[in-house]
Length: 70
Image 1 (tube, helix red, strand yellow):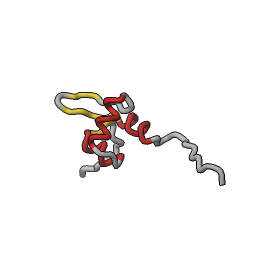
Image 2 (cartoon, rainbow, N blue to C red):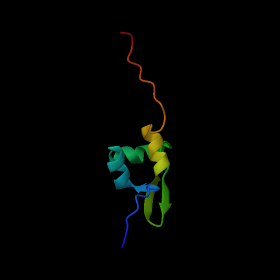
Image 3 (cartoon, one colour):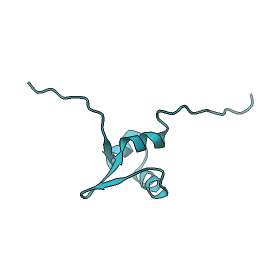
C-alpha cells in the first residue's frame, strides 16, 4: 500500500512560485534581481527556496497596518 506524505515543499520552480504567491513571472524575476528573493540554480532549473518566498510575502511575521487617523 502506497501512502502519499504531505511533505512541505523546500523550493518552488518559477512557475510554482508565481502560483503560490499570485505574482507574475516578471515580478518574481524583478525581486530576484533586486535581491529581495533568493534563487538557486540546480542543473538547468531555477528554484526559489520556500523560506525566501514566505519572507517576501510577509508570511510568519506580524505586520502593522496603518489605517491613518479616523
